[in-house]
Length: 202
Image (cartoon, rainbow, N blue to C red):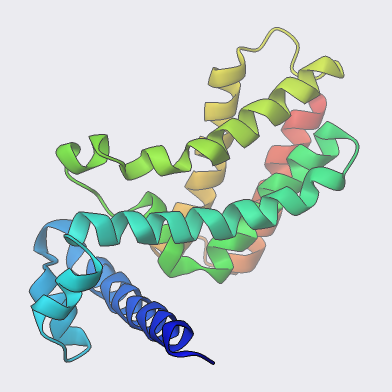
């Protein structure tokens, strides 16, 4: 390995350490109380070292968003080979829920940690646009096959995403304990299957 390649590898490793530390701090403290200084403290580096890699905490936060959505989209796009769009739509929901179960930290950062309005307009949830477009296109395909006739694509997609997010948010925030006779896994799996059965009747 040459000097340039080694330096690039070291840079990537440092950025990974920063992002891993930032993920923990954002989740523990929230966006407002997270600072470049306490991110640096988490990995025993000076704030100046953090600024060498990222201009501010907003850039770090958006990079974590992108990481999460890249991971989610990679899993969703595997389903593109499923020919029937309605079967693909149902599978998308299962993958989305599994993603939340397997990547609780990412899910909380992507959907739950509140970002100031100014920072949001500069990037924020707009990073999710590709995932939203993916869902809109899938709903459009389902309608072309005779499903969800007369439904507005954006309203319907919003309803789907909201339902999935509700299931995942309750799990990620440990708000499922009131259902004492059901495990988290059963609530997510079979709760979603109840929702699917309503779609199948529609």
